[in-house]
Image (cartoon, rainbow, N blue to C red; front, side, top):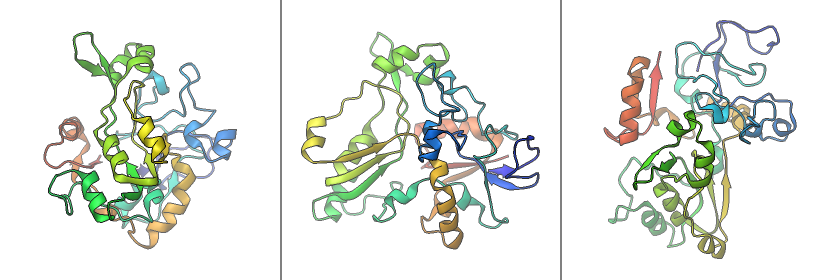
Length: 281
């Protein structure tokens, strides 16, 4: 989120001085996929060399190597469509989370940063089943453990992000392994016939999932990069009236931009109850 300093000659929807929030994926708004609400599969910005979807900010060549958005100044591709103009200052933290959280809006939401509501086991799937008559939740939205790793031949794993920069994308697609603790919790928390929505980033293909169990329980799985621009206008209107998703209390830490490296280390290690960090330039 920031203030527009310069606009290109083809951009007529935003102007210098506008306050905007920018989705993490870059999409054109006019291709087949964008017109069908699948902006994360934008045919204009997708990296066809690797068969990947729309190019996000701050990733490797697998997704176009667009410079990241956590910086004092950011160049925004496809700015005729992506940026969302914001209301005057006052509720800024609400606009940071214009993301498709409405998939879970009809289900009571438990904050994983708080103690388990009723179960002494410390397991969220058990706690949620206890609160729903033993059935589980109608819908479960899994945010992210992600972070695929590749085996190094000695029983250890190295980051997919590191290997992708070295060109090992084929190895990632063949033997990459994700952390799946949150994924297992999601599957264990949903009721039979329910829906699990996976919005976190997965980068590997060798993930052990009990398909027989999911099939037997008739679980629907929705996944993929968020089609952010599909929902932003609706969500902007929704949170303009009231903080219905309690997002103003979502961030656990507010830090200056120069502390970003330490913030990443803290988030990865899950220390200091770090759930979400807001960086201020």
